[in-house]
Length: 387
Image 1 (tube, rainbow, N blue to C red):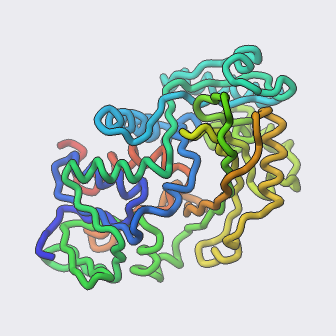
Image 2: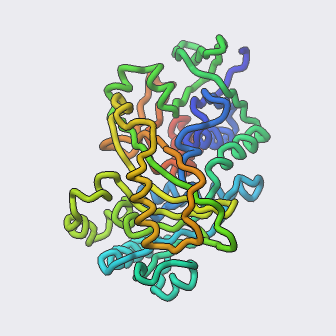
Image 3: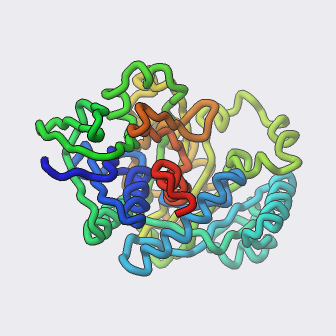
C-alpha cells in the first residue's frame, strides 16, 4: 500500500478503537487493523457497564472522562449508550458501612452519588427482595451500553470521520526503519506509519514472543448468562450487589475495607470462583447475569478450559435469586469472556524503538476506562500534552 499513516492501531477492540478515535480528533491520519471480520474478544463479551464508581481514584478519573466521551459520540451517532445510572446494593451492615465510606470519598472527589434507604431501593427496583436489601448507593451519571452493538456502531461512526479500517488483517511482522514503521500483514501488504500502537494480545504474542512471555500478563475467564426476555418488567441501569461491593477496587480505598475483607471465609465458592453478582437489562428485555473470574498466566491459558462450568452457572443463579425475584430465570444464552490483565500493574505498556508502542492488559477496566485513558495516552505518545 502506498498510503502512509501517522498512526496504525493494531486491535479493533475498545482500547484500540478509542486510541484511533482520539488520534483522529487530533487531526492525524489513522488506520485500524483488526485480525477478525469483526471484534470478537472481551469488548463484545462483557456486561456493557461503564462504572467509574467501581474504580480506584486514578482510573475513576479516566472513567469519568470516558462518560463524557461516550455521551459526546452518542449525541452525534447512536452507539447504544443509555444513561440510567448504577447502584450498589448492600445486604448487611458491613456493606452499608462501605457504601457510606465510598459516598464520602466521592463527595471529596466531586463525583455525584446518592445514598438510598431500603425503602427507596425497593421502590425504584421492582422485585428486589426485602430480605436482602439494607441500603443502596446510586451514581446517576453512569451509563450502560449494548456490548455486541457498541463497538460495531463506533467503527461505522469513525469511518465517517475518516478512519481507515482493515478487517481480517493479521500483522505478521513489524519493522522500525528510518522512514517509519513498516507492518507486514497476512494479506502480503506492507503498511507504513510514523507510529504503531499494538492493543491486541494476540499480535503482541506473535510479534514479540519473548517480551510477551516475560510480561506479567495473566488471563481472566468470566462466565455470564442471559435470561429470556422479562415480560412487562423493567430494571434500569447497572445493578451491582454485595459481592461487588466486596470485590471492586474502589472499595479498597474505604477505611473499613481491609478489616471487613479479612473476616471473609477463605475457602468459600465466592473466593474460589471470583463471583460477584451483577444484573443489567438488555435492549430486548432480557437480563444479563454474572459473573465469575478464574485466573491463569498467559502461557497457561489452556488450564482454564473453554467450556462453561455448570457448577459456576448454578451458583450464580442461586445467589441471584437471593437478590431479585425476576419474572423468569430461564436462560437463553451462556457465554465465556476472556481478558488479559497485569498481576501487579494496572495496564501493560512497553515502547520499542521509540515508535512501536504496546498497550494491553487493561483487564476489566476496558469498557469504562479505555476512552479516557486513550485520550491521555495519545497525547503522551505524540507529545501533544501542551498542544
